[in-house]
Amino acid sequence: MPKFTYTATKEGKTFNGSIEAMDKHTAMENLGRQGMHPLVIRESSGKDKKKKGKVKQKDLVIFTRQLSTMISAGVPLTRSLSTLQDQTTNKYFNGVIGVISKDIEGGMSLGEAFGKHPTVFSDIYVNMVRAGEAGGILDEILKRLATQVEKDATMRKKIKSASAYPTVILGITVLAFFGIMTTVIPKLGKIIKDLGGPDAELPVYTQAMLNVSDFLIHPTITGAIPGLGSLFPFNKLPNLVLLLALMFIGFILLRRYIKTPAGKYKFHSLLLKIPVVKDIITKVAIARFSRTFASLMSAGVGVLDALEVTGAAIGNKVIEKELQEAAKAVKNGKQLSEPLATSQHFPGIVSQMLAVGEETGQIDTILLKVADFYEEEVDAVIDGISSLIEPAMIIVLGGMVGLIAASVMGPIASLSQNVSADN
Image (cartoon, rainbow, N blue to C red; front, side, top):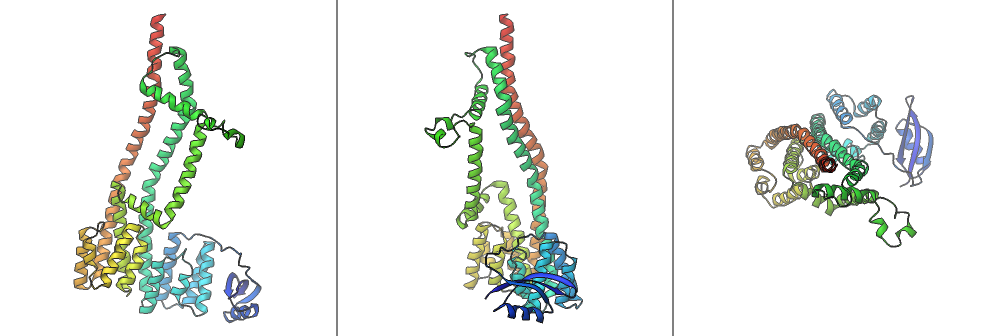
């Protein structure tokens, strides 16, 4: 069906959007039924790119909470969305809410309207809204969603905050290393050779430092490739430039590979083998699983559907695969606690708590307690790592500078004494 973009007015306000219709006349009629007065309407060429934007977690939380409050107060859905659209300062989100409002006016359910915007509303969000609509508890579900989005945003913020400092320090360390090697060491190396002569014996670590510096500033690799200079002007470039180019290309290729299903699975599997990183990822995954699964179960979503949606929200393909295997076991008649009891990544306490919830019929309540516990565990681990990272990085940076200083200044002092003794 053809798609038309339009500019229209409604109650003194101007809206931009798109609509599907058999022809331009039908599109104008459909807009008229929605109370819109078209100013400009044209058929999309198919080449028009969708506007890209980003909705912050804070904006999504505010939107969800306010929508829940309005629905609880009995405000009609379309009026609630219109009010929230006026209050939203994010232009992209403002447009998304406008499109959702029009879809609702056209007879679409809220869950279906949200589902058309996967970059804003995740599968979990959409499925929980659909379950809330079906069960008549949409306001309660939206409250749960707001809490869940807040928890996820807080956890991501803590992880990013903890990784920001070591990333910056590591970057500074690498830049300092290359800077010293390409500017300072060559000059100091010349001083050493002038003092000791070409036959002077230097310590192994000093000679290694001079060799690395010489390798970085001279085109020993590019100049040794036959015919390279006739094709590209690379035969005079320092090896450092070539190494940085290769590192950049390698990073891009690795990033593309990680985005593939096989590459993502291998990368996630590797992360689960790194000691400290493994603990953080596992605890974050368990917290997400527990809170999301509990929310879906409380919304009346079936166990199999809840497992499918929750698995995609875990953030790790290896653990997601375990949940898929658990879903197969549940489909064959087992309780969820049974396959999780043999899991390699879910601790025994999770399956035990889940078994208690299955016996008492309070799975959602118990899993929320599990989620709270592991979120506190993640906070404790991240705080502990953060307190150790700063002195560790300072020691690494200081050790590197100290090694360079010892490699250069030691031989200079020794050669200076020899020269003085000879005189």
